[in-house]
Image (cartoon, rainbow, N blue to C red):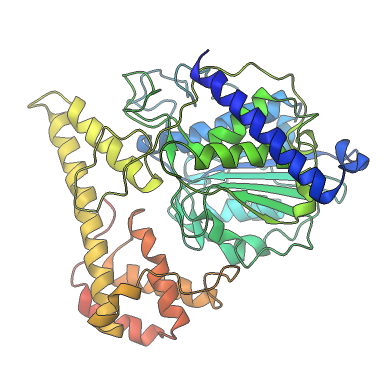
Length: 472
């Protein structure tokens, strides 16, 4: 029996046991929740929030999500896809024109509607699509979420992110408070899945439980999420790939949706297995899939949002392994790890790119420069933020700089304008934060919660940063 089938056997047992527990505590599942509700239209907005071949996995996740929805009967006119579209035809792609989300898996790029790509995959169009504002669009296909009160809406975002925001391909970020404000549209029920580091912070203390919105995230507010199907793993991609093909949370819910009958499985069933797989990947836990919002909705059938499709037999790509702890910014990445954090996946890609380039070639020199620039940028972020903190609070307080000092259930900050201001002020004086440097949003949040003003931040950043270090 192969690894994949062993996993599904265990997952089925876990799901049954957890379902029995829920039934005993809450009573039998109401009949109306076992049936597909209403006759409204199923809408979906799929977003890959990064660009560059090294971030292959985000676009692969989103393309796979499209295939899941398409197999469930959703129409292209109701599925909106935003992705930079620089992977399939990249000169680095070993299979030109194709994208896979599993080792030796099918091409998930075929047929994907490229609604907002390249420069059109930007924050202006993101919010215009979300709010249903066709008049606000600049470029793209013109499709927006034109949902009505009887319709369902499914939103899935795979990206880099950190405390309080998720990234978009145009280097802008979507802050949690503004994202939730933009959800005030017509819908009967809405489901949101977010894949990014610290993705729980998009909803923690913010998403009310009296709305018809149910969300899950790949990690808690204080955790990294993890890439999957990476070089060096037990079930790695083919050797001609030097990137991770997917993300752990994403491929877990996607493969569940393909393996089980969506007409008989609920959001709760999917959550249980995705939680189990994302947490127990080896000797130690990785990250916790988190639920938010209206918990009564988790008894809705998957087909309500993802459509109905004939279950497919799982392939043999499941595996459970753990990564080493996060590498510091100035250390070389250990390419023997089998599961890597979103922050470290780019280092893995750059190291493998360097290793595979012929000695003495221009490609070798270029790869070395890219890796050195990334490490240098990370060191700059580390040193700059620590120095700013010392200038503001004193050296004896650095142990609390990255500590989450708020209680569970509280949002990251109360003043989101302050958080935006501190990030923008830092970047004006010290250069754009790298994706690695985004982890210092916790430090900025702590500054806001301690009353640091723009004037104080300008003074500290001006002293700490003499030369900007923009992203290479």
